Image (cartoon, rainbow, N blue to C red):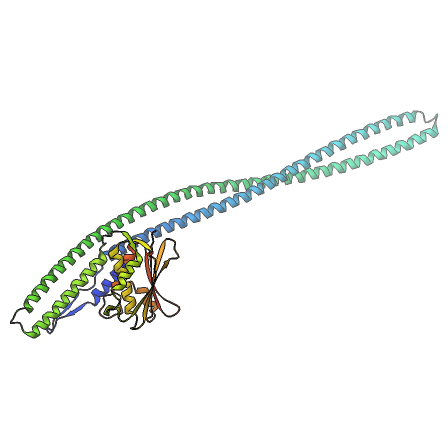
Length: 454
């Protein structure tokens, strides 16, 4: 809630609590029931519209987030399947190399078999030659027969080994072909899954782009609609401001007429004394109402600002002079701790009024015989001067510190609660700041910051 929201809230409270009773007449006047103000209506309308658009945008952003998460999951799954396919391709290559090695071994064995076959045929020829010469050389024939028998045994052994080896090769080839086919089938399944995931990824990307476009369109629509509402709100507020200013000036004119008529009546020689007393009360009320409207207008209107180079020391001396050695000072001593001119660029009347209101509050918060200390020093923020006014009054409650600059907030009888509001507003016009705090040693400090110049 900003300061003007607080102003409107306070005005509404005043409207709700406002009650005027006639003097000795028994007639009472009450304000009409509180209604929604123009500013509150458009502020509520704007906030509701903004919230509705924000909910739409949030829902669309969540949908976009879910789509992006799906994309990330698809990409991770695609990478995982691609790695599996690469591993299967390596297995296929390994199986193919193994089949090639089996074929090479088989060829080598066939070559060995042919060599042994040639040897067996040679032995058979030698055996036939030995048979023909057995009668002549019987002893030699017996040796050759023995060698022939050994050759046939070796031939039989080689045939058995060849048959066993062929069976092993056939079994190995069958297993390798089966494993090779299984790997190919698994690869085909994975490639199908990969293709499906890629389709899903493309669909998610298209959906993400569509959501992005819809999100951009919603943002444009929201900005356009809120801009229209803001423009209409400004138009209504300008019109309302014109009405308030017109009504205020009209009311002041009527109050002046009432006050003049009352003065004329009171000056009449035949008027009764008690009637004069009653008319005086009415005249006083009219004057206070006139001043109230004057202060209200100064609060809601922007003053004409004329900036000039000002010595902060001289300006503070002028402000202090109004309170020193007179009743306005409330018997409180003003102690000044500054000597250098310390120049600022400011509107003299506006800054003077702000400093006077802050000093007035500090003096009123102090008891007679106490003192208010004023210091000027460079602020922590470069390019700013800080004016510190400390008084020895009672610490301000925390809940009051939060409301101390609200219009019409006051704890002092007979005061309207606009002084510090106007002072802070004046500092705002100078790009400065004003705040109040309780100090650790039990004092109250008002701190003003304003840009400095050389």
